[in-house]
Length: 372
Ligand code: NAD
Image (cartoon, rainbow, N blue to C red; front, top):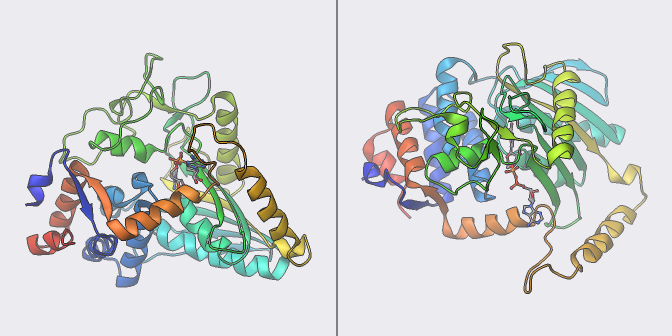
């Protein structure tokens, strides 16, 4: 039956079943139960918040990374240099879904002690949706800023250029609100995250116009510019296509992306996206801020709330529309998908099922993921 989902038909999978299914693939690939659960949590959390680009669709690629040694099961964060409020740490090419929360725990502890802390993480596996980790920090009442790059992942052309010079380098800023509606701004500095092109390539949501640029300098929405033509039994590689993603926000976004490469790549010591052949890694400079060290009592939260109310009171552009805060969309989506399940394009499910089969899961185990 899994094969029959192979075309563009969308299926819906319950979040808990999808999490258990993805975890069991990683357990079959040699991860401990805890590690497999952490990876599956991170991936499915991206699905739940509407970022399918960073969700279960990434499983085949992560598995291929385990096979090639790009990611090492059983590894985690280790401190390379400890200056109290400034820590430089190695991810040891462990899963980003293990390394990132460890880095967050460290930063939270140091910010509580010093009021302000910075944790530089180099050589982590892919950390997925960075907002997941920002939410963890903000839930502790801290503000958070992170600059992330992807070393050796040349995907994005700079403003005015055609050839790839940058990674999709995401910027993430989180602010506590004292309630369960935190502000989480979290986006790739490419016009779209690479995974959104992957979703489009595999029959999911189409890309907006002109987010890619061909080698001929023509702007396009065709994801094959990034991947080339990829048969279903091959894991798509965004390094294979002749073109590039474009930076978001024209010259401003391109400049921001350049600086993310510097802060996440040069300041952490990990290195920027290119040009040397370097081992693939997510690198992060994360800053943790204890608001009460800046403003006494509730003064910060009071100002945040009054400014949110003022911001949202702007007359909507469209009749019946709403001004959303960063993080609103993800929270609304999470409530919906927790209740109604996670939709997956048929092609993406077929690829996930094929990965599970190859990892050693039985047909009944694969079919069990689809029971609602
Ligand atoms: P996106 O374009 O969907 O933007 C998301 C941000 O915009 C969120 O903060 C969201 O709350 C806000 N937003 C969305 N719609 C809004 C609206 N109508 N009004 C106000 N705010 C709104 O994000 P993206 O660029 O596609 O990135 C997706 C994910 O990819 C992110 O979670 C990012 O961390 C992740 N990513 C990770 C890596 C990595 O190397 N690990 C690289 C690139 C991107």
